[in-house]
Length: 431
Image (tube, rainbow, N blue to C red; front, side):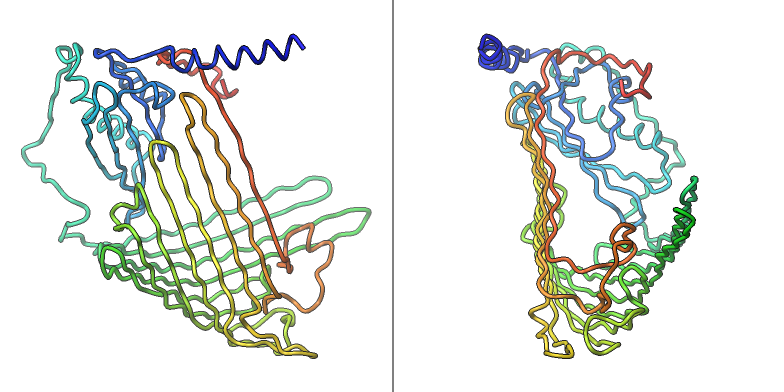
C-alpha cells in the first residue's frame, strides 16, 4: 500500500515538476530538431557547439523540422522548416538543399550542418553570442551556379539509370538457402512528366534435410514495369501503369496488365512535405496465365479490375500522422463448376495508419495498425488446397479473409536538457 502511495505522489508531484522546471532565457538558443530524414546527431552536436540541442520542442525556443523528398535523379530534396518560439516567436524561415544520389553520408551531413548553421544565424544574432560569430563566403571566380531543376545543358536529359545485382547464401546442419536477384531501371522526372522503366529478376531456393528426407522450396519471379505520370495542375495528375510479371509465389506463369490512373491532391503538391491528402483511382485489364490451375474454371483469364485509395499524411510540430484506405475489386464475372461469381463480390478493403503525438514535454505516444479484409477468392489462387509446408515456408500465396498487424508505445523522458556532450565510447553496445 505504501509503495502504491509513493508511486502516486511521484507521478503527481515529481513528473510535473520536471516538465515545467526549466525555462528559456533571452540569451539562450535552445534548438529542438524534429528530424524526418537521416540526421547524425552526434556529428551535428560536435559541429554546432554554440547552441543547446534539447530533447523536446517544449523546452526549445527554436524548432527545426527536417524533411526529405525523393528527386528524379535518385537523390533527395532536404528542407529545413525553422520556427521561432517564446522570445523568438514570429521568426520563421525555410531553407532547402539537394542531396545527390552519389553523395556519401559524410558529404550529406556536412551539407546539413552548413544549412543548420545558416538557419540558426539570425537567432544567434539576437544574443550575446553574435559578437563571437564570423561569417565567410568562399566563391571561386570561375565557378558557375547550376540549378539541377532548370539546367538546360544536361547531357542525360534528366534520365537516371541504375543497375544492381545482389544475393546471399546461408547453411547449417539441417538447411541451406540461397537468393540471387538483379535489377535495372531508367527514370526521368521533371515538373511536368515522370517516367519510370524497371526490370527485375529474383530466384530463391531453400533446402531442408530432416530425418533423412530432403525437401526443396523454390520462389522465383521476374517482371518489367512501366509508369508514366503527367502533371495536369497543382491538384491533378494522370497517367498509367503497364507491366509483364511472372511469380511462383502468386501462381502467375505470365501476367500482362495495363492500368490508366488519375490522382487528385486536396492540397497543392508543393505542400506534400508537410501535409498531403490524395485520392487515387486506377482501372484496367490484365491477362493472366497460371502455373497451377487457377481457382476458377478457365485456365486463362482476361480480368478487369479497379482500385480506389485515400492517402493522408501530416508532419507537424505536434507529431506525425499518416493514414491510408484502399479498396479494389474485379469488374467481370468468374465461373466455377457449380456457379458463376460476380466480380464485384471478389474484393479487398484495407486500412493502415500511424500516429505519433507529443503530449507534453518529454511525453509522447505512438501507435500503428494495418488491417485488410478480403471477400471471395482471387483468380490467381491455385485450385488445389495449399499445404502445411506452403504455410510454414511462405512460398505460395494462400487465401485469407482478414489480416491484422499493430504496435503501440509510450515514452517519457526527463532530466538534463543541456547535455550536448558527445562520447562515442562503447557505442557498438548501444550506449
